[in-house]
Length: 307
Length: 329
Image (tube, rainbow over the protein chains, first blue to last red):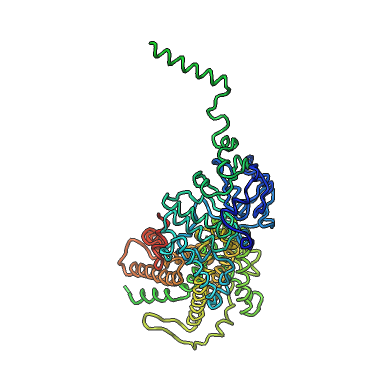
């Protein structure tokens, strides 16, 4: 509903981020998702402790961080699959904390999973149909009278077939989803999420376990979501992919957002390098120390050559 | 050996009231376990509720028979809600634990000494089925195909009502499972988080499945009570639930005809083997067991048969091999 009124696409997204300070929690001009002070503790461990973060509408935002940074936990909280101990967040200005997962999805914030959840004993087309919202036939009593839902079912099927064609899964229409390859299941999951016309698509490691041949096609589909006016937030480990498709990158480490910025510069941010490799990774302690090490090595070489 | 007797008893069991009762119990389980993946191990409790609702309403309180039927259906809904509200948000195994305990609680309550004025204690209740048999349109006499099948007019009335209930329940489920509603249930069986992420209220659907399965089970309880014109608490022990699961797996879970054919075949084979062995012992063909041991051996064979079924044909008679084999990848 918001998307149509705005210019969509990469240019518009990049323009929005132009000149923005690369600081954690920087305000965005048109945020679709605003998160404040979200905390999740597992016993003594604080898995997530996000002070403030905003996700720009109509852009592709990457959420990266080393293993155990709390990315997936944060994702689960935002989508209602886990409860936050503290904090609030709003989606399209509406408070979403404590809202159950299915209601989050109905509001237009649809997620996928790191371990793909294709419903393997349903056919591909049934998987797709399931993604459609407000189906009349999903009520038990109305379901008993096919005349009440047949029409809507035909519309849903037409939409599903259209999406399957776009994702090149139309040949698999009547196969069980369990017979698809890992990459095709990722595609199916993404296509299925689109059946509900989401405004914000949340992808949890969309490239995990996908063979390189499919990676390009999957990347294309993610970019296409932005062209269609949707916003994308994704968790990913593959840095090439992050650099290739994201407009903005948020970096988490130890549950906190430690840096934000455009993909090209955020990778070289000192805080990010420290978070990934640990502070002081194989760096000399000081300039003198470095000098001394160098002299030692030279002396050793000299000794060897004179012998 | 009297083969006519053996076949006659087996065929009568295959279409008799036992087959109806277990078919209804298994149809209820099919909604819950077969389509939705809910492990209800307390189906016997739902049958007990149905049976005792009629018995108590009519025999203890002297109220009309059809009020008893209404109360039975209502109580089954209440029972399903009570079991579902605390457990359906938890992992599937919690429901299994709670339902098996709840069914035992129902049985222990109706057999308790303290409440024997209402429920009749271990003796149960009798003399409540008069109104049901008053409606019997069959004039007294023997019906069937002699010499194999023969039922009296009372049995004929029970069979007519019972198989009609089976047919109606199966038809409703057939329509429901073809609809988008059924699709959501099957999807929940696969992965409820995925369904949740697509905006479906999983809790509500699981509750609906639990209620519908329980209500169908309570209808099995009606037939149980009416076919015997008596109820006894110990008929509703956990064996009943496990036989119903056997019936469901034999016929094929998540198939409309699975529980019906499974129940008919289960009782046909059970009585065939039982009567056959009894006859063999009586005529001296088998000498190493006594007639009293036949019952136990019959159950051993049921267990063996169930194991072989799960090993060699886990999808049952009607199941789809493809649906099963995908998980093995």
